Image (cartoon, rainbow, N blue to C red; front, side, top):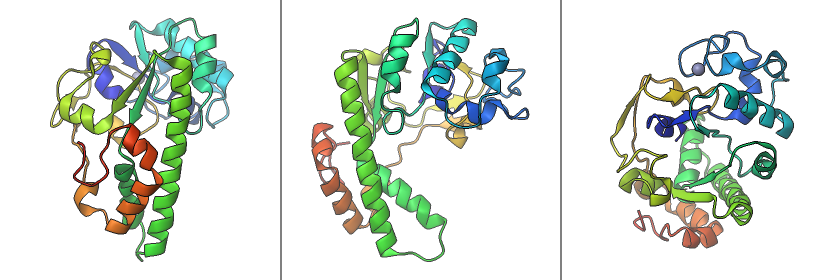
Length: 258
Ligand SMILES: [Zn+2]
């Protein structure tokens, strides 16, 4: 998502800032811009004391200090911090909004819980030789509940940040494009099949998905869950996530709202 936003040329994407200390202390780490961190125009300008933070997720004060350092060197007015706030850093946006000298907007990117569950179970299956029905069921239940908790946190953040929190449904964005509230921040129009080349946009990400370092990224909607997910896992994830499936208008069946 950060890469897509940076591709508009109107924003600086710096990846998951909360996770930056895990990479900043490693001298050979590379930024997604291709440069070593010490040579990167964004991360290379971070003060030495922040470069030496313990290699674990940043606490709220260090997180704010990292963002302040980035603000000082940014030539863009919009900075995207992709730190995943909903589950583990639920109260971080409140702190940052009170501490930073800029206006903070939250993007609540929400994906159908059945897609999330199937992605996790499928990934686990590829890494294990022996399939296990019960292991899949437990993993599906756990993932559904974590998804639910993350969205409860996002809803609470919405109470605090409204109207400065924008909800974006993953499938809808890929298929149909940006809601009006995000025009000018996200690329316009349907994203399915759109190719993003490296070197376009202000894109300086450290952690996160491995695709951040790929030269070319083609946006593809992963909705394999609709046809591949076993029925018992589909029903389980639907029942456990039922209230939010209704609230976010995902549709109850595999052929439901897209
Ligand atoms: Zn860089």
